[in-house]
Length: 424
Image 1 (cartoon, helix red, strand yellow):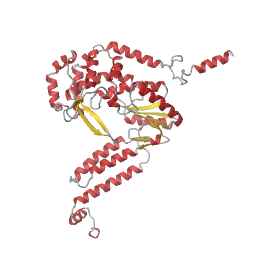
Image 2: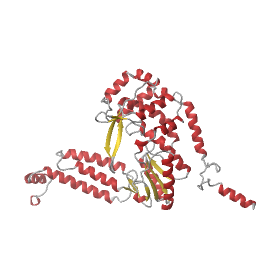
Image 3: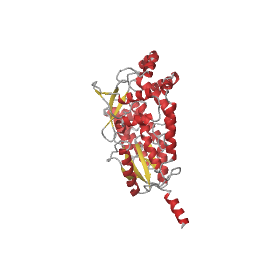
Image 4: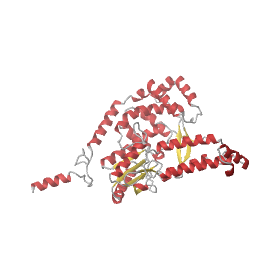
């Protein structure tokens, strides 16, 4: 009997009070992972050591590095209309005064220029383009905060991180499927970058950053108004629109909480920015995971899950970062990505463009090389890619023949190609 009790005690210690299996390093009584405790302790230590972080951020070498990065990124101007060259020149001349204003919490953040772009699946994505001056400051902040936070991020987070890429996420997803996890809990966050709760984000930042002036400056950037083309400014109470250097890092800090929760539950997942896929072995398991994870995201993180786009699906039915993972782990270009390529080719090769044939070839080569580099992981259904190649060539022939205009022009063109008279 004593032995049985020991066995029973051992078995129950392997599960938490909700019946979920505990991971290595978890405490059986609390159900909390000791690595999460270590993470909280590390943040606390980090907070105590960053009371004067803004001074380090505004160090000349860090700012100079930020200027070079902003210059290499290029991009359009902000609401002030100043070009990169003009802004960098002005920034250099007034840097000492700017630094003083920032450290004394007197710096005024400019509005961001509102830009709307069409999304693939319909609707519009809102971009917020800061002035070059604010981009430099944001980039300087980003460089130092990345050093502090990136080491704490999950290995399953692949977006906007040094040493991580979309290709790595696809390869990991393929490995999960090869292991038999062929059902995907596909979670789509509704207007994620526009709905990040400011208060919750600032609360999370305050746990790892001790510099209150820096926190105040970040808050100013979050709340900077969006100015549209007519000069009307829209105040923001949530969100961090894409377009500024800080936005990707802040989005990862918000969703790192989700990563930690999924790791604690022992799930296999890949996350790239707001695209998160969880891999399970059956549809029933996927439905259970979907309910609990959606509840966590909406109740704890205060974010909204798009119920129309989210769901539990076979891996072959899911588009992830432009790819589709097939049963057995094969990788192919998703159908939507192929459709998107065709639309771009049609736009470039429209026969009424009136552009030189050489220029069309140059545009197409740029598109195809970029497409080929990104989709180089595809190892299934490559015959479809060959079909597209033939289709592009036909489009080009139609474009070139259209340029001949009259019959005589067509005959002369065919002669230059060495076509015999009988075939002209």
